[in-house]
Amino acid sequence: MAISDFATVKFENGALYFLDQTLLPNEERYVEMQTVEDVYDAIKRLVVRGAPAIGVGAAYGMWLAARNYAVENGLLGGAAVSAALSPEQVEAWLEAFRRDGAYLKSSRPTAVNLEWAVERMDGRMIAMKAMADEVAAGKFGVLQINADYILNELMQEADNIRVEDENSCYMMGMFGLTLLEPGMGLLTHCNAGALATAGYGTALAPIHMGQERGYDFHVYADETRPLLQGARLTAWELSRNGVDVTLICDNMASTVMKQGKIDAVLVGCDRMAANGDGANKIGTSGVAILAKEYGIPFYMFVPTSTIDMSIKSGNDIVIEERDPEEISEMWYARRMAPEGIRSFNPAFDVTDHKYITAIVTERGIALPPFDESLSALMDV
Ligand code: MRU
Image (cartoon, rainbow, N blue to C red; front, side, top):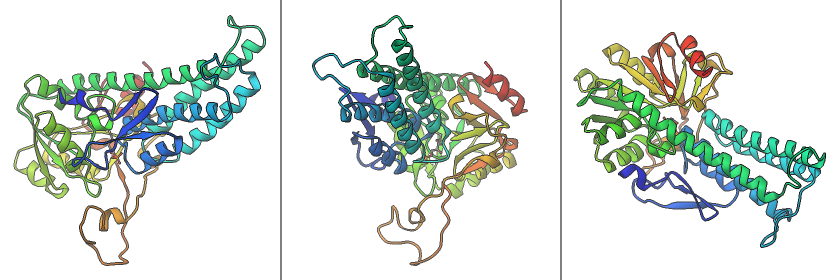
């Protein structure tokens, strides 16, 4: 099955690799990450992208940060057993870890999975510090805590984040399929697929899973200007899995809807507020407004790791602005706008909850009013 023959993020023989998504669809190349700076750069340049995949990549990036600290500070024993660490040594390590975490979190502002994953790793490191204190006070049932133990704990947390994401994609796929019928025409925007997660994807999960079950969907993929995630990534992963996919320019969505080709719109999300407003790739909100006009259901696929209950509405979501040259030069053989022209390049927009028919999470499907259904779901 096509989805299992690539991984966006993989950890093999002690090394972290990302499938370089800036090279797709022309080249499939894995790049090795050796430092937290490499991971920062990969997230910023969209080598690894899509909210859940950014979270998974960042979790392993934090392990790299911890491993490099241990090496640089002589905390690992090499062939011998690593020496016991004092609470002061673990405290210093925790401080460095937190500095690296703050740095990594600053690589991109909108997808909440980035800070969520770094904070999960931070939680595990804090537990290590508490354990070091207990060991030193003679209160714990082990005699020592060493660097191998800590790195092992951090690796377990990163693995948990990856496996949870894989499972949550599967569950969103199953819930998503309950909203769809065989033979439907579906529209999607950006890439919320396997390339954006550790599993089947979020919005593309029911499409991949429907493909395995003979649903025979007809998918229209918005090309997604300016970075072309729809053309380069969604078209790549869907066609590779045998899905019937047709690429359209973003400004053709209204036409295919009007022609009756679209029965449902499926999109992902980078950060959802407590009231159901959801930030996703620029252009998503326009698609939602069109869908409402044509009476087409608009489904947002949102793992709970993407729901930020600390913000009330989409007004509080920070929207990343990217290099204007992505609009005027990137992908073109020659510049396609006059030299010196000003351009504005917000990477995301917020879809108001009133345009969302249902929010699909790994815990179930939330229906309006979302402030009530999301808080019930998040309390589970
Ligand atoms: O800038 P990107 O490519 O990281 O943006 C990705 C999206 O907007 C996705 O739709 C979103 O992260 C959900 S991915 C499951």
